[in-house]
Length: 333
Ligand code: ACO
Image (cartoon, rainbow, N blue to C red; front, side, top):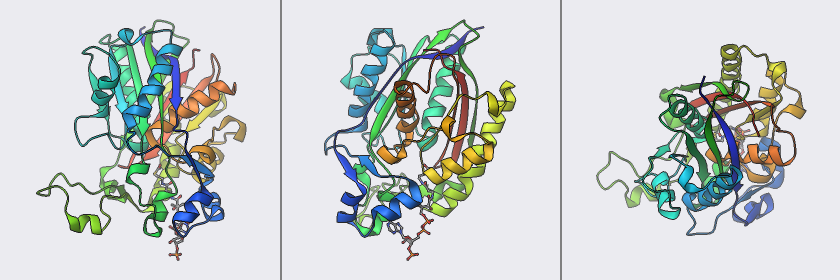
C-alpha cells in the first residue's frame, strides 16, 4: 500500500543569539525567572529585513540536498507559519519567489505550534492518494519582528525565538517505514487565549494608531489557560494515535514534543510514562520556534544519533487555536 515517509531534513536558525541576560537589558526580567518557568536560556533572532521565507529557503535547500533531490523533483510546497512574510499571499509563494520550483502548488498552513504536524498530515494524504510524490514541508517563524521587547510585553517576548526547519516527504511502498497515522484537533472557542489581534480582517483600514498604542499588534496570551489545556491535550492525542496504530508507549523510541515550555514537556513525559532519555528538549537553545520547532528537533536528533533508521518516532504539539495533533512514524533514514 502506498504511504509517505521522510527522506531529507534541514534546519536553519539566524546566527544572532539573545541570552536571557540580553533580554533583562531590555525589560524587567531575569535569567532565573525565565529558566525556572520555561527552561529557556537563549533564542536566535533574525536581522531586520529577514522574513520567514528567507530562513525557510536555507532549511529547504538542505532538506532537498539531503534527500538527494533537486528543486525540480518537488511537486508541492506546504509551508507552516504563524506569521507569513506579508498579510497575503502565503509564504509558500514567497519561498517560490526565492527558489526556482516552477509552477507547483504552494500552500500555507496557519496552525501555529501545531502547524508542522498538520502540514505533515496533509502531505501524507496528498501522497497516499497518489496526487503527489515528493512534497517539501517547511515550518518557519520570524517572531522577533513582532514581539514587544519592553516590560509591557515580557510575559510573551521571552518565550519565542526565530528559526526554520524542513523535511522532504516522498511516497513509499515499503510498509515498514513512514507515517503510520496521525490525529488532528482544534477547539476554536479558545482562539482568543493566544493571538495577535491586529491588523484586524474586519476593521476598516485594518489597523489604527489607537490599536498600536494599545499594543494590539503584539501577541496576547493567557499563559495559565494555555498551560492548563496543553498538558491533557498532549496526553490525549498521544494515546489516540497509539490506539489507532496498535502501538504502546513502550514501543516509542523517541518523542519529539512541540517545545513550548520544559515544564509542559516534563509533565507530558511523566504522565505518559516516557523515560527522560526518550523525550527531546532543545528549548534551552532556541525558545519556542512554533512551526519550526519539530523539524529543528528532528534534525538535531538525527545529528546526535537519537533518531535513526527504524526508530518509532512520536510527534505531538499543542498551540494557539487551540489546536493539537500527534503523528507516529517509522523513521526511514
Ligand atoms: N519576567 C519576570 N516576571 C514576569 C515575566 C517575565 N518575563 N512575565 C511575567 N512576569 C510576572 C508577571 O507579571 C506576574 O507578576 P505579578 O505576580 O506581580 O502579577 C508573575 O511574573 C507571575 O506571572 P504568571 O503569568 O502568573 O506566571 P506563570 O507562573 O503562570 O508563568 C508562563 C508564565 C511561563 C507564561 C506560564 O503561564 C506558561 O508556561 N504558560 C504556557 C504558555 C506557553 O508555553 N506558551 C507558549 C506558546 S503556546 C504553545 O506553544 C503551546
